[in-house]
Image (tube, rainbow, N blue to C red; front, side, top):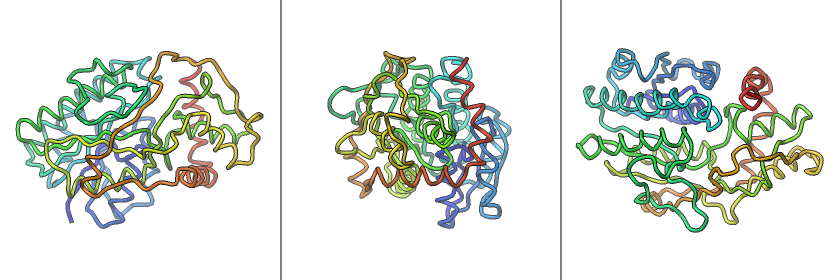
Length: 330
């Protein structure tokens, strides 16, 4: 089996991916700085099935050591929260742009066979009708609307530039991931944990924003599929493409229903702190479907499974809840 290095493998999407790959028998190593969003405890059940290296992707020495005898790199490490990016944009640039450049440069020197760069649908910006295809990404950060998405857009460009030079890079642009191990600063785990604590869901504006809710275990399957079958130098959108689309209000109402809470009692509409932020994300996934991969979803069931995970892992999110809430009170 291939030897795989996962940067940011102790984070949310990374943890889901590491479990998936390790349980399939891959030789998995993780490079993670273990910031607030990276939990060493996430990976403890995999002791013996993977190797954890604590280090910063901006540190060339640490990166070089982590790449020893590695076949594939899946680069997930990133600062990822829009609100935090407003408070510290320089950190986001350092990690998401400079760190990505370091990973690419050192991976070239190490002779890595395949490099998957995890980007985001936010590099395209918002779209009111229709769907973005991979060619709709314009070089630079002009489409992105936050410090987070701008840094990811620039990191995306770096990966594609290395691909043009002949390095075996594939760029993956997934939509809004959810599922187990997601830090409770993000919408869904914040809403779930609030209700479990007897608090309300703070729904921004009228809750009509549209997101494509992509289950993190499905993202893991998609990434493996691209490692095996993806074409070097290409970008691939990954999305669930729900029909009908899911508004934030519907998502919040589902969480209430699953937890037997009356939405009128469990949801509190609050002024949108980012009223001009992206309203709708939507991606065309025809390209990845041609490779034989399609997300087959029952979103309500995936929401129910996610709620159940947070019910069963109260200690995990309780130790993180206070810090997660602090960003909304600054």
